[in-house]
Image 1 (cartoon, rainbow, N blue to C red):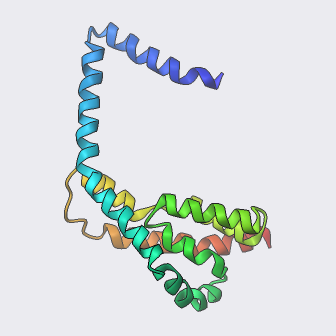
Image 2 (tube, helix red, strand yellow):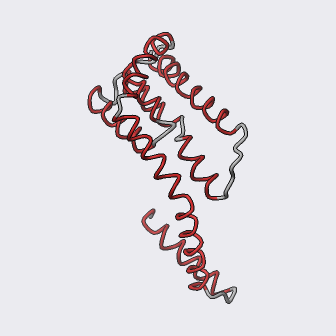
Image 3 (tube, one colour):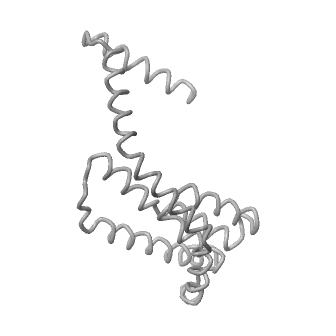
Length: 170
């Protein structure tokens, strides 16, 4: 039944447009044009973000930061193997997903590391990417407290992922 949802939605939109006597195809083209304008306007921010992530990983900065944060992570009962994921997640969804897959492949989904990484991936956001895309799309330059609050929420997700896995799975 679920494989009919998209065709039904498209059919419903077309039927509604015909009922209202709208030129559905012209409206579709106008929406596509607006979407392309938005994509072009946010493209520089995305390219810059992806370039910075690649440089950070290639330079060894990720390894240095991981080593520096290991004592704090151990204090919070966060396995050191998960630290690179906590550093990549706010910056790059694809980089975090790649590292997450490596963790699951190396340690298994049912391991403590796999469980914490899974909860962490589900409870945090790609903060910098999201801010770049959404604020860039509407030309917001003054983000005020958004970045600080978003990073605080990410840190809360990192810490509580280890705590909740410990509480739920022992």
